[in-house]
Image 1 (cartoon, helix red, strand yellow):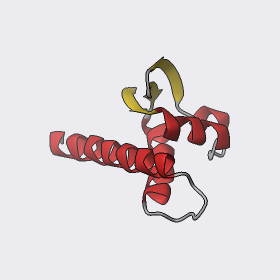
Image 2 (cartoon, rainbow, N blue to C red; image 1 turned 90 degrees about the vertical axis):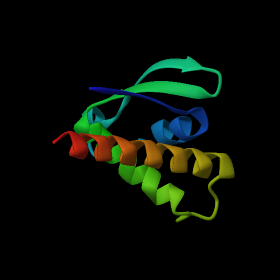
Image 3 (cartoon, helix red, strand yellow; image 1 turned 60 degrees about the vertical axis):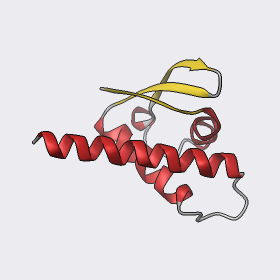
Image 4 (cartoon, rainbow, N blue to C red; image 1 turned 30 degrees about the horizontal axis):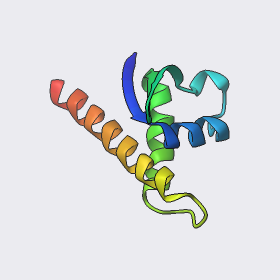
Length: 90
């Protein structure tokens, strides 16, 4: 399991849409503080989160609030850095 702290605006949007095929693929919120949410994810949940964040970070929607897009960019960068760190460790 990995613990991430991400922007609340993006998390609220993501968790409301639940863009997963199965509820077990949804990351789990463990804490809120200010404008941040701490979540717990396994490898499969991280893949879903990263894919969704990349889609929104690339500006693939016209009606998404900019705060969500900025949050998606931050989440995508976090996910990428986690993947790079894991690959470097191998």
